[in-house]
Length: 178
Image 1 (spheres, helix red, strand yellow):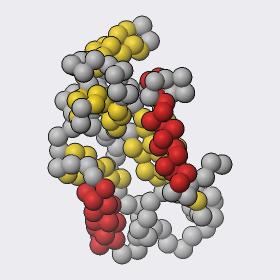
Image 2 (tube, one colour):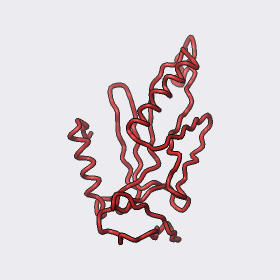
Image 3 (cartoon, helix red, strand yellow):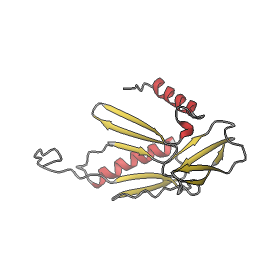
Image 4 (cartoon, helix red, strand yellow):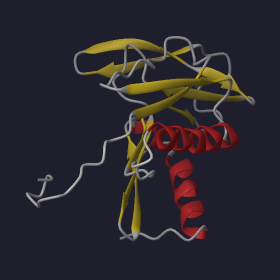
């Protein structure tokens, strides 16, 4: 019987859960997400090409290990991210920002890249990345969930224009709101 109590003649083994990560994440960034059967692979830099090659290789390896396996994906989570802050929002020489969580405050490091200040996460002192993304594939549809976890990028935040720009790019590429 399967999870819907329908009798089945044979079972198809599940593939392993796979995680790709950069070999040199920002200092203090938590990248040790652990799950039973999780297979980690490190790449020099996360880019379109490195992620695409990893995805294809992962499917090929699963198929080689078990020919009965139907390769594919159902869900992809992006739980580690960097998000750019608006120009001038922080002083250009800032090294950490205070992050308030419940009743405590922690100093969260920032990253300087391309003359902009970026925030990455999650770190040991924060529970979430600034922005998390979830892709879910169901028959005939791919749904994208964008979770804004830090108030600077929420509707009243100074970085919300970046979110609006990203949504506009998705709409221009053919995605739709439902």
